[in-house]
Length: 296
Image 1 (spheres, rainbow, N blue to C red):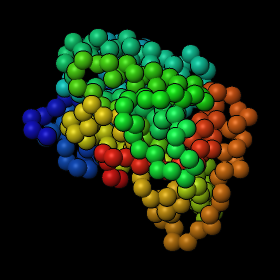
Image 2 (image 1 turned 60 degrees about the vertical axis):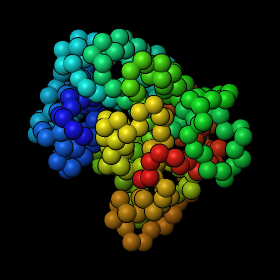
Image 3 (image 1 turned 90 degrees about the horizontal axis):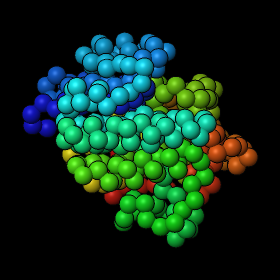
Image 4 (image 1 turned 45 degrees about the vertical axis):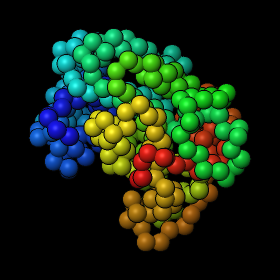
């Protein structure tokens, strides 16, 4: 990576921020090549004591406030800002604030210090699949957010707006679109259900579910931090199927596959702020996701 880089993780007190820091420790990058700061709301860190302890043990500095302010960026003057604040669902205003509103308020501060901007988006932002029949392999667009697509959820439409803002940045930028991130640190309901199923040797299965394990998602973020993905919007997904990845993650040699499509179908009836609808919006199109720029 060259000289030591200062990296600010905006909203980095969640499982993805912790994953990135832990992966950097494993690769012996922290202290030698990277120095991490986490900008987060004080109440977010308070309710995630496990995250705070892991980050502190890894030597990560916490920049806390009642809200995340531009001064948190300007005070550190980082080389890289990784924007990973996010909500899988909820009220429209809160989802938009997490994925776009906060970034907009920080935008000028990021530019003023000349930092590289890395935006963690979602695989669901690839909305226009009209030219790709079911069963097709879907890669990144030839042009950013090309084509006409209808976003099914607040999550995807607000992430798209965050992508547009990032792509307008005058400095160096990269956009990452992870699938479902699997890992023990993920507090979301879907991972808790997956762990429960694994204990029963039942593995949810869908050939069309784009998944990525936490450490591989972290590796993608580190590549973006290095500058390897500048000017690109990149699918962060594993090429192996959901069942194979889960069997390995759960340490199972044998398992019974359970089709998740009937359950995902319930999402069609859910509101646009529901994580169930987000899952349905991805699975119903029956596409395989791959990347031209990453092999995971």
